[in-house]
Image (cartoon, rainbow, N blue to C red):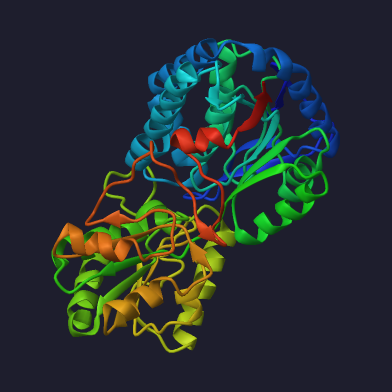
Length: 468
């Protein structure tokens, strides 16, 4: 069994208990990590608290240099880390390399550069000097769907800002976090600046959220769990940032290029086997083009070959666990019960082994159906008709979420006009690609605060004014 990382070294958990790490493509146990305890959390938080003054006082350029070294080492080890992620959570190897590994390396490098540019001199506002200082000890609680990227999105800005960190990675896919811990150790991060306690959310996660010596909690996960984190953190009035669920809409306007819009919309819905909080899981199409678009989506879905992560033919890997597979299947069944038409996929055990669900498309979806309102977190696309742009905007905004979305139109001006009306944190305009230097986060029950870029870094800084 592996160990916890506390105060610059690998230590055994006080619980003595373990969590099995399962390869979702084979259903075999491939590793074991500690099921940490509240006592382990106390030890890690104490290490982070003790290390904070010296790390906060470390010149920003030195902090940035360490992050840049970590980025370089991650890039050097990218193939090995990608293989770990492919086994850990089932992502096809190409996706695991490009998105799950090399993108986080780039994010680390971005934050290294931002750290080097932090201005300790402050800024003037009349007779006052405005300073920005690190928040303190940060608890980072991360999910399994992007098990390295989501970790880096929290650890990189926290360390760049001068905070110390206690990380709780998801127990479902924890191995990428272990790879990062080893990299941070190798580049010489001072003891206690970064700590990691693996284990279950109700034990480790809740202990961190409630801990009186934690100054900030950054959480990514379900909206339900986000509510719990907020409630626990409220007792000590600590800062909380939440990146939660989504039910994002891809709005296809009548003059859009359907070949491009439908192909890209299907790809976005199914990337990472649909296990993406910002996935465009709803496609909104004008009623006059509805049947045409449904046919195109079904044809596109047929090309998503199921298979293991190291098979070059694979376009759709397994879901991360049996529990996640069963959750998606329940939604597929519920969609049919509520009257939606299953026009592609839906099979829950298409291969002999592994937690696979076929690429699934629903037509005849009405606003208010569960598959239109609730986050499924699997390869399930709902196609919804509209009759006017105003109705399309109303449907797009008609869920509790507001994380992402897309607008496809004949002109950029038309697309931007509709994008501005969507109550969501980010919108792709005519296929605009994800930008890891731009702020990422949501409206409504998709959370609060932002990650990535300078706006994400600012979440980890307090503001102080000196009056003269």
